[in-house]
Length: 432
Ligand SMILES: N[C@@H](CCSC[C@H]1O[C@@H](n2cnc3c(=O)[nH]cnc32)[C@H](O)[C@@H]1O)C(=O)O
Ligand SMILES: [Zn+2]
Image (cartoon, rainbow, N blue to C red; front, side, top):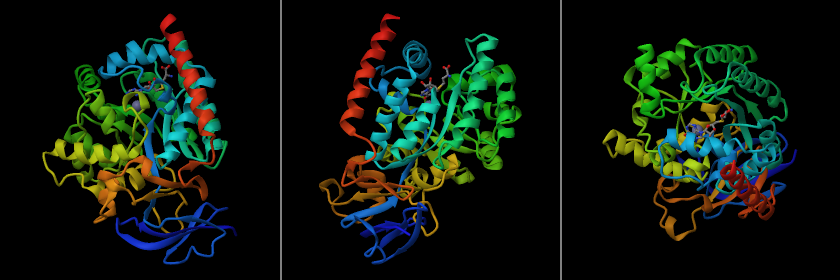
């Protein structure tokens, strides 16, 4: 056996207690063997965690990774006009090579800021899978389906592509899983949703979908169908355990109960919801009802970064504002959301530092002015730390970043290619 020891740090345990210990990892199995003082000293490879906190790798439960190419391209608009006027026309010009380059940039940013797993909904997902394999991250991937504005043939082809990706891409590596990913309850027609979801069940893959993000998506469903969107979702076969719904901003009490009863998860995306002025998700009410809640950045064009530390802080802050209660969404709740909550929501291993768990861990330096003094490391994770405080990143037992240097990717060439491709993309979109 070949081992990795993460030594001399504080360790965040699943119950949010912090203890002084080493973490010993089986590198081949990608598994945590033990958490105990001094256990890592004689390991084959060591990572220094002195003056630092060893935490589970953060899990981004909803993103569109390649949208890093559109970071800062169109800001300061609400969801519908942002998508229709700016994002979709630009995305129509994306090539598979662009998507690979944008995803590689996203992977670099994620590893750098302590994210070890993500759920993606986009195009050219076989290329996204290649980048996941190359970068060492874990992911659950899906081809996003939109049927509005398409003729029947094109719409069915989009559904078929999503199912084919869900079936074929999951085999590429142990670190890659898939989902059927209809874009939203209003951008995919009912017959496509019913058929696609039924076929996803046969394949045994979960469904990842945007839901109840803006009022604009809720009101038409209520007017046309006389039921709330999540009741409609249930009718078309959604909301099985394993399914996860991004945003869940505008929910009524019956919809919160539906999530709790069915075991489907909500993925909170606070920065995107603020930036597009979509609203404040009722996160404390979801937690009180026993709904599993994960945390996501959404794409970099509505955030505008993939640093989950920002999301942690936003989740805690907006959670209080939404509840009108400063005790709502406490630091530990936000940290749980970004770790075990997200990992469980998207059905990937990780999110916990304990023997037998996947060896997905980060070492967050606490030796910075903005993290001094250390009364409570969990408070620092939620409120004061940023992605650049991450010193080492480990996924599946493999060191992806050591001493702030990303090993799996060549940062300068990843940045240069993304920059070049983003410029050419915008040029094509604006002359199209
Ligand atoms: N195959 C589909 C693409 C769907 S991918 C997922 C889509 O979600 C879009 N997206 C990004 N952020 C959000 C959001 O906050 N809400 C809804 N859609 C978003 C993203 O730009 C991308 O077009 C098509 O033919 O258009
Ligand atoms: Zn999204």
